[in-house]
Amino acid sequence: MIRYIGKRIVYMIVALFLIVTATFWLMQAVPGGPFTAERQVPPEIEAALNKYYGLDKPLYEQYVEYLGRVVTWDLGPSFKEKSSTVNQIIERGFPVSLHLGLQSLAIAIFGGITLGVIAALRHNKWQDYSAMVIAVLGLSVPNFILASFYQYIFSIKLGWFPIAQWEGFEYTVLPSFALAALPLAFIARLTRSNMIEVMSQDYIKTAKAKGLSTFTTTVKHAIRNALLPVITYLGPLSANILTGSFVVERIFGVPGLGREFVISISNRDYTVIMGTTVFYAIILVVLVLLVDLAYTLVDPRIKLAGGGKE
Image (cartoon, rainbow, N blue to C red):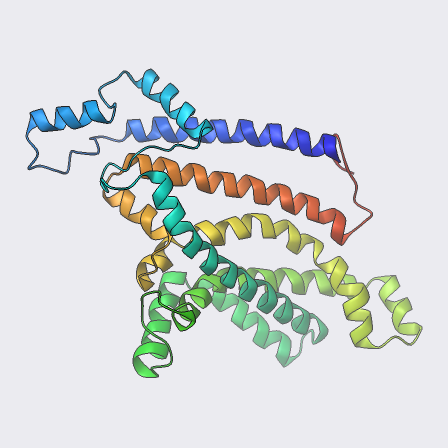
């Protein structure tokens, strides 16, 4: 296990190095510069700004300096928000995005598994059809459309929840459900198909023949085996929810890291774009590793060795 984790950490470092390198050179390939939009700035002042931020140095020097900054986790100053560094922006925005992401993840996992199990146990009945209609809607409708729909129905028409901002629990409900819709639908379909397959296995029939109730058979024997493919999806899903709330945060005025990322793109704030990208990449690779390790907890038959899963 320790050897396997060590290898995976080395792979993670290599992957992060490639991501940092690609991000840096892609940003350099974008036409213009961080001060191009500030047309009122005289050329001499722009030159002074470039010198202050080290943008007048050769690209390879900037690249080496940036690698050093990433290693020491000093991501540099923001070009547009003069009083803040990239680290401060991440520290300010990520707790909000984390809160929203965890809430959405809980809704997606609980709701998706529940819908999937009900659909499988009531296969080809109205409960199955209803659950799959909800799943298809969740997969088909983009979250920014759902966000606007929720605002119109539950805020403007019914007045149940605030339309935007982030000042208490009631402000988190609509953005959480908007963000959870797609993963909830995917988990529901995945759980349903796996449960149908598992419920037809011989050991489930044996458990029923021994007189075990449907509830006991489902909870103790079927769900656990049916959830393995779902767990595979949880790593990228968690990273996607924690980092993929850009549009939803923008629509609901949530002061999270996703909104900061969107603003940094429109402002051409290169250091913030690169810093948040690296931060998101770290979250993704760590979560994928944790999901692999979680396999052994759900199914003890799976052993992690030096060469990977066995």
